Length: 203
Image 1 (tube, rainbow, N blue to C red):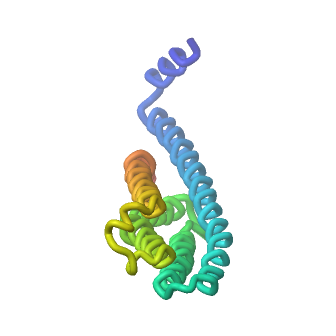
Image 2 (tube, rainbow, N blue to C red):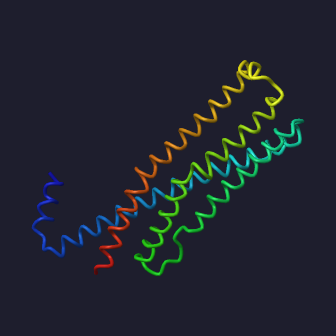
């Protein structure tokens, strides 16, 4: 009943009042979307950096511990990859809106920030998934000394198939999850921000 009454009031209001109402509602919607996005990015970055803090010393130890040269190379690759991922995330984070002189400027900065985060996610296959898979595969080959084994011997090693299946499965899921995120999260937010920027510039 309350919703019907609000609709009637909105319909009976002058045109400029309805536009003002729509703008206010859109402003609240956009701000809520931006705030929830900031929380999601903060959680993602915290998880990635926490994993980096845990994994880096483990693989540095593997560089020292592994007798196989290829395993050492794989471990070094993984450490470099982990640090590169953290660098990429922190680099984009620097684009987060700050010191805006007006709300319109804040929205424009937010749009740029969202677009850069979107591009980062869209290219996740090249800077996140494939380098990680490559490092893990090299480490697996070296640690199991697969280059000195026949195909018949390799086929019988369960760790090979479990490892490759796990790497591929995690990579495919990560790729799908990020593609879904672009469609469900980034595109709608950018659309709303664009709409609000247009309304504010028309004043």
